[in-house]
Image (tube, rainbow, N blue to C red; front, side, top):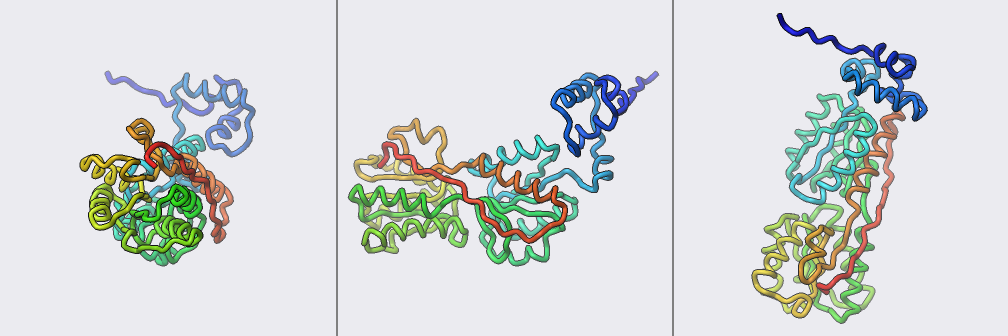
Length: 335
């Protein structure tokens, strides 16, 4: 004879917790305020009885899927891993699940993923767009709010969570100039990204403000990947007599460092060096690496908080506000 498993009902949870079924519903659906004492009693009763809310029924009652879509351009990039962790912290604590999609910096992939999310009835979308024209979004996105993170899309407005790219790069390049460097190379990421344009603008402004002549041959544009960091470092060092190098992307920083290590180039004796993003290895290698650190987890949390606020508002308005968080220049031993 087979074992019959009885499904625990909400009434049993209410009875065990000593509260009403309405209170149990409020705790599960987060629809009304419940005191912390009662909330803990409900959660303990749910755990004790092995009660699992019916997400499908919950969605039907609320007309929500309690699902957030997320599109990132490179899931292997540690920067986006940090952002994902921040987003997860917020959405999960608010009873939502996260569906992650990787566009791999491919515009066609990105469009396909947006169409797929439209069919899955997500409640909102967070995305770091690729470099192409995104005017198509205005007629493609579903009836849900969208928050852009790290990058602003070309051709479409919306709320975005960014960092102070121009200002922090200006600070780093200014430090190099004041230290006596005039031939400063810069390796940037994908050409048409807003992050690339803003970081390059900070570099150019520092040269302008200190009366230095820009040498465009010292400005190298890559694809924001490890290999281009390696190859462009080789190119700029072989062809130009530079004394300092700034790499404006984290994966390209790793590639650049690999080339410098292979060639046994002494930092900062032969070359002053500043990279992007601050990982554990950057502060324990010798010499410790000077970097610009971005608040990745905070960016993710902020984007998720904005999105959930828009979802709760229900009536979607056209928002175009920018939220600029603070990236910081950390001076260590490599420059």
